[in-house]
Length: 457
Image (cartoon, one colour):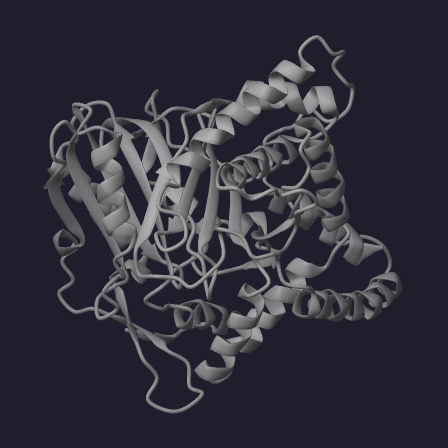
């Protein structure tokens, strides 16, 4: 079986390069051991439900033609599960070293572009690491796929819903007029991205290597983040992004940089797929680029400023404009696409994504999942990625950096909980605002709602 790859998926495929493998990496940790046979059975159900996981990428034979997906004959899922044991004592140090190696190693595109790695001996339990190429699907779709393999502790299937999007309202004439004004706004948003000024040169920017470094924070109680959000009349997303900004500031300050009045641009994916297509593979998202006020020394003011900037993004059409651009790039020559990606990435310091995960504790292959974490890929010359993931009432921050820029991403990841502690201390005793209680939505959920409203009015 063979099928044409979509333009958008082809665009993400062509972003692959030695200095930035275009794959999403994540793990499940288990306090107890995991049965390998049950893991294999679970992966067999995955490839049984999704043909894509049995397909490899076939390069086009003609200029400007699209790559194709081709089903592999006699596919053996066992070839996509590696087994190994972490060196003693099997702590976070050994796990980080293993993740560093995996996140730096590109997938074999001669095979279906995904791989699972079962690592035994982690704190007396096991870790299952997933690596999936971005051309298979975006983060929202992959989350739904992987979560569909899990069940709740009570044994019930887990149901996830994608962020809802406003439905079209009003008369046909009003919708037509809205479309006429919406398209020029998208063009304007795209032009702003292309012609914006580049970020300042910091330790997070520079020539890249082929070695990546990954880290993750201690779990943060989601309720603590909500308390800060309620006190400051901001969302969970505002608080977490500002805390990451504070961590980046701390890192720069300890290395002699005085980041006063410094803004760092981040690229954030925004889900554009309807709720009923949340589990469909492929890439259906745009990009927005908020600037994080790293130069703001006051943590509370940093949260408030982040709230104002995200609020402005809700009225932006950046997400739709970049999705349209990626669709067009997928049909262009690879040299044109690479030049465009270099242009955009030269103006950006990092990639950041916030994914609200399941609220219930889960089982995978019969074993209880203790923690879930993932890392986003970067493209072009971007060397910093930050991932925010919530699971069962806790939030974990993942950081991936290029080793040529930042050898110790632990310093950034460890600073985020300290930032939250400072914010809690500052707001403690303040009267709780009656505003937003911070429901844990990601920035993409908030922005796409704003895009939908803008398209209607």
